[in-house]
Length: 549
Image (cartoon, rainbow, N blue to C red; front, top):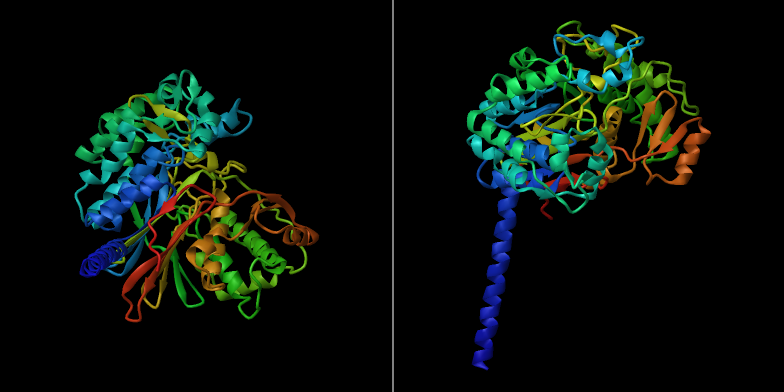
């Protein structure tokens, strides 16, 4: 009997010890922060940095660099992006513009008729714009980083050098793009002359060497040194507008963010030269209908959203200016008078005709969110433009170069969305930081081209108006107005609702919308961070560091 009691006691102590260790591990994760990204290996890279004492800014660089390796078709150092940060020390939200500028030698007449192959010029070598991501990562680290620069690239180097197993999604994009790859690129994106398939290992030895150089020497080699020379040489070979002078002139740019108070929540996003403000037009118009008890994703709600989005895009096409050239009247656009007038103009029963010119924009982007135990947060959208950007890789570097000029609007010549030599790239990203009662409340964002500034407000409405958790807010079916006469509807939307929209005159097409990520901060009654409500879009293959509560 005593032996059994002793054994039971030992087992009880082991269980208690195990539970205590598990609780201690969970508390450690909770205190370290949280990461939500489009790939599990990138999420792990960020969490590893947080667990080593790094802050959100350190971890964001590790996430971005790893995404360059494991999601190579979506973003990377040859690309561009839009970054929102919240610095807990100064209690300040800032916008870091990584979208760069159009090359100074840009000639957009080559992107218009009657130039032969002008449509090919819009997506190929001539569409390459100045990549700005690396300078942005570096400046963010200099101003806000906690750990040394070099170890932030350990994960990216490891997965590039030793390879990683590709998913069905990555394999599909490689297969679609393979015929455009050079022999050099095909040598490691393919096997026996065919594209890599799901389950194969992608090894990027030259990209590993590039990251090692960046880790050891900083970003100077890319913008001024050997890498810059290699890029310049390749750009001359393919007759791109980009030159080493554009690389030398690139720098990280910090701007004051745009802010809008939606029902007591201070929502921040990127200001011009990023085209994020249409999302706030949606918030502002919806706020005019606060007295209505709109049911989530009812036909009345979705019709209203579709119509207000048309109003927001009229503003986008009319007022998307490079702020160094012309000041846009954003304050007037978001004034109560203008928002009420826009709300009054909406026909609640019938779809309106959208008559403004429209330009496509890349859906092939990535977004990630990082927050740390101090409350610092990074919400970043980064891209190459199209899948694998221009599909031009600089031999010996492993670096894909973007095709950002594919998303300029070339007709009529000289319109605000045209590609002007040396001017800012007007990106359509919309990373979000939300404050409540002076404290960080949430951060989120999504890829999706023109759907970005529609997906984002719908997530915000889901969080605030419909009191959803972050995962539910992101996963809920969405709609998006993407062409002059069409509404894209998430396949999960019910047929009855879709038919109701058609009865109101909307032409509908089923398609998934976005691949969002977000983190909402959980606090106790004293305002201390106790956990994270994290969401990763079910439409993608991403992963978040999540702790159940």
